[in-house]
Image (cartoon, rainbow, N blue to C red; front, side, top):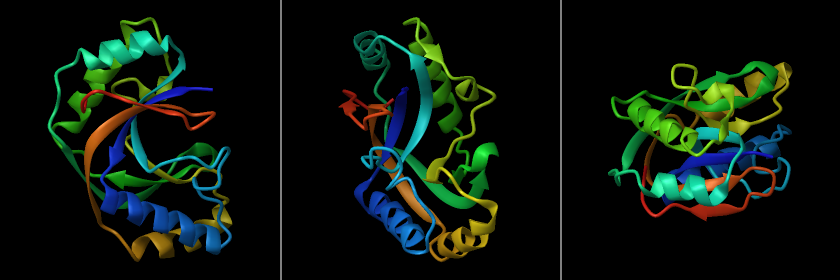
Amino acid sequence: MALAVCLLLDPPADAVVRRLWARLEEAGVPSLASHTHGRHVPHLTYASLRSWDLAAVAGRLSALPARPPVQLQLDGLGLFRRSRCWLAPALTPDLEPRQRAVVEAVRTTGADLHEHYRPGAWTPHVTLAPRLHLEQLPVVAHVVNDVLPIVATASRAALVETSTGVRHGLEHLV
């Protein structure tokens, strides 16, 4: 189980990603829609915590200055080792500093940050298929390239318990 600090996509972009998930499922590619508990939402994760104190993390993030909405242009397809397939956002000038501020804040609570979310190691992404087999890649590429680019606005943030999908809204955007 992990706790993720996530940016949530605006309703139109959320709907586009959900339609992508549905098209992948129809093509026989398991997407984030059917993964584990099935309560996933389209999101971009700033930080993934392996151990944490929920109240401390929420309190520390709420103490950060409120940020304006962030524009995301999802314009590429990426893969991580172990088969996770995702949409790649363009790295805007304010995205990395926002992620760094979130990481610094959660670290002050004693939370254990997953190594892939360390500043400098973080790869921003919006997950499509968490268990992609390489032979399915052409199907995914075809489905995704039909809709790219996706322009999104993230104006909400949440803490998400990844094993259950339970979301805890944050007071403001970080």
